[in-house]
Amino acid sequence: MKFTDFNLKPEIQAAVEEAGFREPSPVQKDAIPLVLEGHDMIAQAQTGTGKTAAFGLPMMSMMKGDGSVEGLVIVPTRELAMQVSDELFRFGKGAGLKTATVYGGTAYGKQIDRIKQASIVVATPGRLQDLLQSGKIKINPQFVVLDEADEMLDMGFLDEIKNIFTFLPKERQTLMFSATMPNAIRKLAEQILKNPKTVSITKSETTNTKITQLYYVVQERERDDALVRLIDYKNPQKCIIFCRMKKEVDRLVAHMTAQGFKVSGLHGDMEQKQREVTIRAFKQGGIDIFIATDVAARGLDVNDVTHVFNYHIPFDSESYVHRIGRTGRGGKSGEAITLVSPNELRTIKRIEKDVGTKMTTQVIPTRMEVQNNRNDELIANIAQTQITDKAIELVKTLQHDLDIVTIAHLLASMVQSDISVKGKDNIGLGLEEIELLIERAMQNRGGGGGGRNRGRGNYRGGNRRRSGGGERSGRHGRNGRSSRNGGGRN
Ligand code: ADP
Ligand code: MG
Image (cartoon, rainbow, N blue to C red; front, side, top):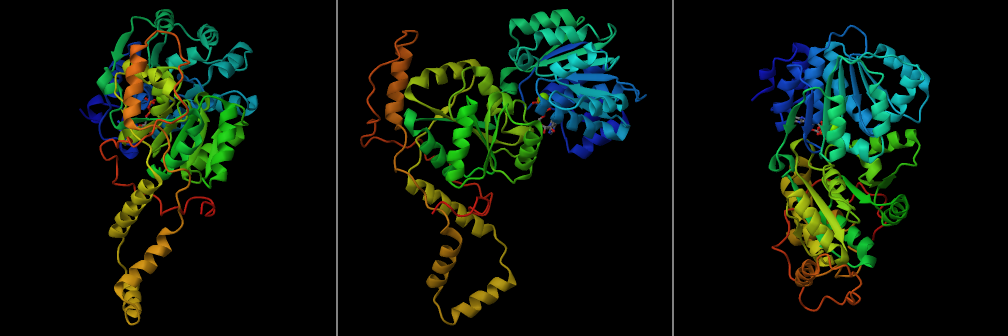
């Protein structure tokens, strides 16, 4: 199936081509025809599956572009509002469809001006309710979309949403998107949708199989060391580290900065401007590592996030799914890495069951293994390098005085010497202990007692067994450590 099969308006079709979308995603295949036929719809699909285009393309294809607000999209967070707005703008600009983004924490005036010129309003519930209730805006959208509906309910926006609908026309087409379908969502759907069609992308299609899911078992006090070691080993181009609390974000930002990484924190207390600046820096590569809470990173759509780290395992499976969905976007592959303490192994097992995928456990690499990995990457980089005339000249000159081994040694020391892996050699538990602990945890299911006396990390005898070689191929990515702050890690 191709996008041209949908018979979208030529300007919209052109924008799809310009965006480089080759083939509709599963949710797009199912949803776009239904929306074009005018049905209400409730769609279940996980994050990163292309929901924005699934509602945006057909909706915009049907719009008149008469200057009134024809479409309203309600989303849970400011970040998401900006992202969805950007994406819709990209698809609609050829057809002359403007978008306005509406969220709290900024002045009303400009937002209201923008709404007056827009065909599509993308809004968070709180501010939208404000504007409607106070009569500051009046809109008559024919299309209404609730995006990430489960998130909005989780964030406590049910009342606002119900209230917003009292200001909307009865004659409308309503679309609801949600990653999960708890009862509260079904109930809401009954209230706001008319004879809806259902789209559900089955689990195997929903779970992004391009995300490799790994977990490492560490003692509580080893988390920081484990994180640094794994980042050194994986050498991510861009990664997001998830924490449970703001306090933890702040502490980790300080810790990682001291270790010489280019990091930035993202949490709910940040000023709107500051958040925007930070997110832009992350998108453009000025920052490699984002340390964030769930709420702050909800829906964040940054391409090229190669790794997601869970500093702690999230409390529930849905957060886990949302978190790991920050990588492997737009058909790319990604890695999700979770640090767990022995006590949290049960949570891992529960999440595996809920999500319907299996995570792989691995052992944290030793210093030597990280170093070897780096050497492999270096060799891969060298192999890819175009040899220039200048280099040939240089070798010719050096060859007069030096033998080839010395030349190699010189070059290697020039490129390579800026990383030395720090920390104790063995971090975390070995595979045999992990297997044993999983077995015990599963036996003890529901048996309440957590506080068993598993010693103080003396789990490692000589039995650290490697899990199948790990990934050695190495991501060539950045030139060595050049994108880190000053070489403070020597
Ligand atoms: P969701 O809302 O389901 O989390 P998005 O709509 O944000 O997902 O899409 C995720 C990413 O995938 C975006 O960067 C988007 O541009 C891209 N994308 C969406 N549909 C396609 C497609 N058919 N082909 C290629 N990329 C796509
Ligand atoms: Mg989305």
